Image 1: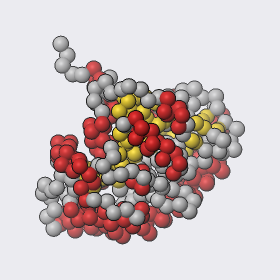
Image 2: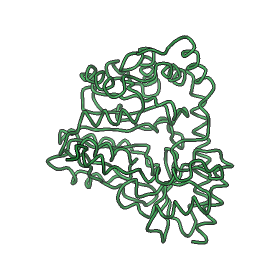
Image 3: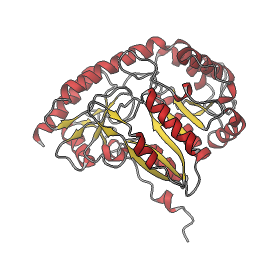
Length: 386
């Protein structure tokens, strides 16, 4: 008898990794496959972590996060949202990915279901499957002009085993940003059906136009409602390799959050948390500059791909991805592999972001503009000949 769970043995790499791992060391490839820029974490953040490391901050710490970091997060939410969060609601368990797993552990069990608003970041589906639950996809509608959520379709997908709804806004991969009305409607569904809500808001500062930050469920939900708002340092402050994120949870779960953080990771890396404090207290200039760069790059992508005869592309409202449909392509993974080999452009295959996306690809436009221009030159040349 094989004691390993069949669910684990059936796990596969995502359509991001399947492409990237084939050419990760190829210096000629312009990498648009991962969700990160080519900007090194700002000096002032790295220096803060180095000072902490040099001063001996290498020991076990609080599993829910070092108190000065949690205080800084409380001040940060007060500043950007006007909210005074109780300290018991703030947990820094490690990476934002880890907070996704912990939120799933809180809400899901074997045989339960969760509604995933799709297209979605593929790791959420994997988390659900690892926990023995079943993902139920509800796809955003396309156009005219933007992606949008059909609330009636979402409501119709709720069944007797539904335990929660997962939504990511600003969205990876579409760039969709939930309106306040959509948020109210989703929260109302959760309240009426007794469901939990996992809100991935890690791109909350990566927003285009004049609005900043993106609307948050924290502004609507009560402190004891089963709403888990997930966030992190990776996207706004160029800290992807730091594996540092936070979650805002119901107040009464403070002790269980400490236990879950301890059992999953024993707490975030001690000296890295001081980099997080520096980001929160001194990072606004960087946040604004990075957002402006991404908006320029978004406009470049729209200019180059938006009117291409082979491409259907809705304008991203936030995050830093484009998710075009390529006309005539039915196997996005094969197309992305061809793009790596022939055009030296690294893309992510659309199928990995949920059903109905086989003709889509995802590209990250957070890199330097001149590198992005080169990638778009190569990509459009490939589209013109396939």
